[in-house]
Length: 283
Image (tube, rainbow, N blue to C red):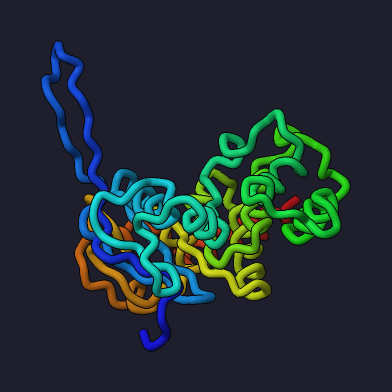
């Protein structure tokens, strides 16, 4: 890429250590969840990281957002190494990189109003809203397609899709440059998924956002990704532009993922439509 990437990961590795219980498992054991992973996130673009459960994609996303410490490797944001950032540097980074989690209800405190949830990042950062937190929360509710008058409601009063929109509004509160979407639509119904994907694309166009989009569903990835990285067993086995990955995959694992994507048989659909029409005419 000719343009300097907004975020760049170089050889990211995450190793977890577990301790034995002294009875059946002795000593320490180590497990490498992510092994030497490198990728780039261009400005105003979407990198999708795909793979089956346990492939290491969510661990990679959490390292990219500095929610997990990096065992080895480096993370660069706008050319600056933030791998070991602490204090003010870490706080600044977390304004620029926000996260939308998979389950909106587990990531939203049920005892807090929507206003308090959305403005929580600002409170953490010590940032004042010029026109007040309530006005900001209402504006963000409106931006993500929710009724601003519901800003004093609680998460349990919303549907799953609406709750995820609250999560997106919260991520936008500090004007981030990158939003990490960790399986952000996988828990939603298909029709709701499509609406949230459309919202994310619109926000990217309006605000110039970049996304790291974690998913296992290639059909969803095809709708939003500019670049795709395919992970299995903690490693990226293939990455490239969306068209390259979908139209000319090179790795056998990528081919297996693509073969697993449900397809619609046009002939079957035609026969089904004819049957429905025949039944309607017979009534």
